[in-house]
Length: 369
Image (tube, rainbow, N blue to C red; front, side, top):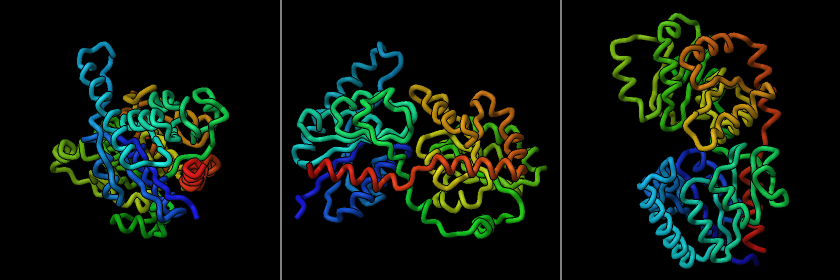
């Protein structure tokens, strides 16, 4: 009989880290229903709500990011919080006694996996981006396995540790059975007209929102329908700016709970270039215009977008150019059936299915070794 399986999963900060983490946990549970799984996140960050909502226990660390430039005096407090977090993580690990620790990136993973390394617990890291994050680069030398979503990652990690697995995505997206027509009708739209979905991540994207606000007349006069997720952060400001306007072909919402149906309704998506979103577009074969955020570490979203656009698997628009050109480009693209077909076919070629299950098997293998 297999020995008891106890797994620590750490990371978060954004949906891009949390969705893969939860997907890996679900896949471990599917293979080993007896597994005990504990998440370790950063206090005050998104994972502290999202992980319990997915049915898992989570412990928070008082860890946060360093300020730029690094010589800022405020970083003394950040460094103290990091040392405190590592001490708390060690205590958690001694109590929980995991056989293996998994890091998915984000502040908490550096402390939790650092603690695991010092206690001799085997570790696996999962890197979602085409350009490795600082936490994972640092943790790589002690990791037994490194699961990646892009080729060429030996630039950052020891080649013998790398497994090309792809990024785990939200299973609900793949399980959606609603048809395109039903999805469009559920939004109160006309299935015979083309539909564009604009998403800026769970918090929203100022540039994408500004692109819409500057071209409301163009949207209103077009024959295209728009679903616009503004993000909770911007929703009040946008509601104020739209007050008194009637644009029947523009549906505005701060957050979309059923992304599977929203993707099904869309003929074209406009999105940031986070790794999890890109993996979703690849698996469902969705034509997409990517507007990478310039406000992320190492400019990794631009590198993610280029990994697709250089293969004609997505259209890349620079953040600075988007407010002027994005909406017209999207309308022209969604009317071009041949372009939509080629984008869809090319992005599907880049899909790596069953990522969560492949990673879960590696986690179990490490734990049982």
